[in-house]
Image (cartoon, rainbow, N blue to C red; front, side, top):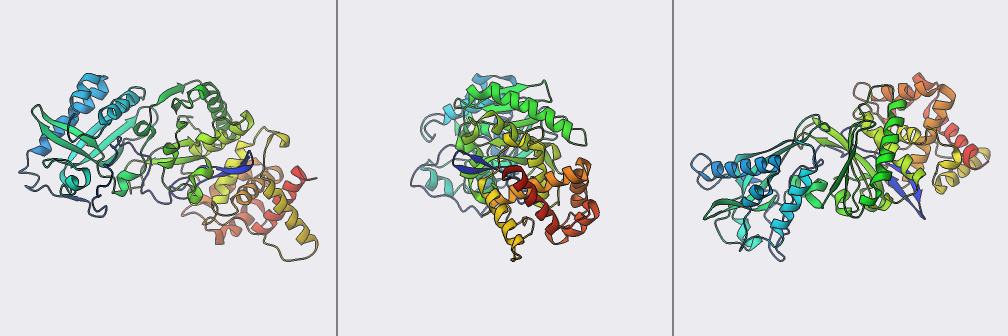
Length: 465
């Protein structure tokens, strides 16, 4: 997957079609977060200028002892989490006037969530700047004296992240008779790096399950989805085995999957395919080591709450599709989107009979129209889906056509040709839509127009004849 555009499987769910998709942001700007939850803003208050960024503390970092005191406070906070000491953790939280209602309960929830995760690294680094404190009293209705240093939170899930993940945010602290205490976490919601990309443990009460039989799966559920744990873990294990067998490289099968019933979990992931969270059944995405930089700590995927209770065949295809994206990772960087999505659809359907697979009715209908126009000698669009608009209008057709293009290649040129095509399309700086015909001719001996003709014929042979 290019740490850029990303995937979607078009499939019918009930009366409509969902994009059951792997997706990654178009640029490594706001990835999956490891920040902690923010308290809700006070209604009717103003937000600081999100473009302002941090400013130096009023006395300068070297002259202001608060930075060192807050560093000590957050070091103790991290140590309490690692030790599983809720009493010590809660001792670092402020209570009373100036603290948002529910803040302490929210922080306790966050603590409980992290106790269920294999946290290998958790640390805080207090910088030498602070977010503009002048905006805080007006926005939060709090007394003066609040201090909001810029803080880098670093976290790593042991066995699942290849590197620690760091995010820049803020902790609002205030001085009490017992020293500095945390008043709010990530209290800078107007800034892009903090407002998006929060992880499930920041948002909801989790029920974490795992399986280590086939690869390692860390499955993050909540109260609304916990009863689906046995089914989902089994689908993850079987899907991992299928993907391991399908890919021509070694894959450890280790993956973190979000499967909560809370819409805000999937909504927190930036740059959803097509921009419509409601139509995304699932998406795979990279977790960047740092926002705006290319290093990737891991790939994860999230399931939309709407698909958690789908039938077993639907879940099988969906989970396998997303696991294929996770396994491929960056190996298809630079390839046209139809190659990546067609590959995931093809692998997702491996081992299933045509009667067990689903394709959107609109795909069959469009294939019929193309066949009719060709027979009548009328003009017809025989182009492969464009990468830039793949997840936009016509997404059902794009996914169906891409899938059956790969099905035709596997049937007529051999499965090895599918993987050769992926490698060639991703080689070097990748292949643009405009240049893909040269690669197609070199690998499978035909151009995109003939591939579309063949894919259309195979769709109709499978579903309409």
